[in-house]
Amino acid sequence: MISRLFVFLLLVSAGHLALAETAYVSDRLEVTLRTGTSTQHSIVRMLPSGVRLEVLETDAASGYSRVRTADGTEGWVLSRYLMERPAARDQLGTATERAANMELRATDLAAQVEALTGERNELQAQRDGLEAEVAELRAELDNVRRVSASALELDQANRELRTRVAATDQENARLRGEIVELERNTQRNWFLAGAGVLLLGLVLGLVLPRIRWRRRSGWGDL
Image (tube, rainbow, N blue to C red; front, side, top):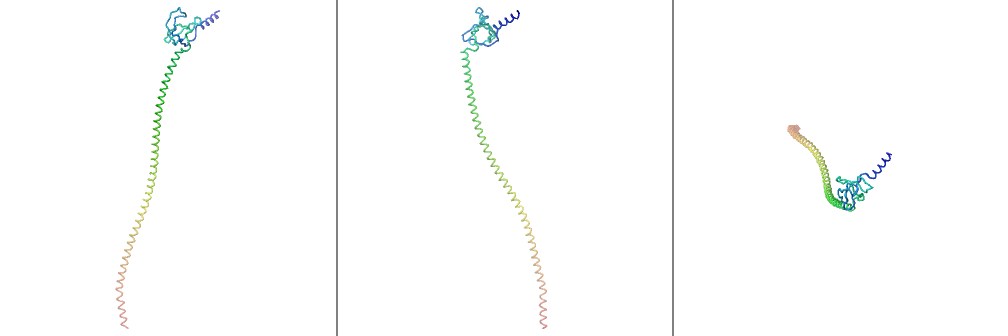
């Protein structure tokens, strides 16, 4: 008996109670929020169309639902005046507002795109300038390398010339030494030749008179 009573109470509760869900006042101008489930109950306030309500329970027998407003006020309204979605005019207003926001967003995005495009063009110009500068620096570097190569070649040639000049100087010094020695030998030879001639003259001066005297003596004897 108790079990059947318990089941019956559950069924009755299921008819009156439901999980809290969201509902909206229909597109009537205003709906009365009452303290109970009949027109005999006092009015708590008037709810304008489109107000968002939290449905706490529904009484199918009376056709009323207990709701709670956003500010926490609770009461009963006729269930037929509640909708799962906002009223059409409210949806239109919301859609219009969203469209306006989207248009503003689109305008903002277009401005951002334009700014980014300008920035991209500026960066492109800077990149082109840098590429031209890099090309110029590369050409200058190639020229420096060529000049450096020429300088190295000239330095090598100068070193070779200095080596040849040093060798030539050494050869000239050797030749000058030989010339000096030759001049000394020539002077010595001339000195010896002069001395020989002088000595020969002296010898002849001593010998020739004797030879003539002997010849004369021989002729007298004949």
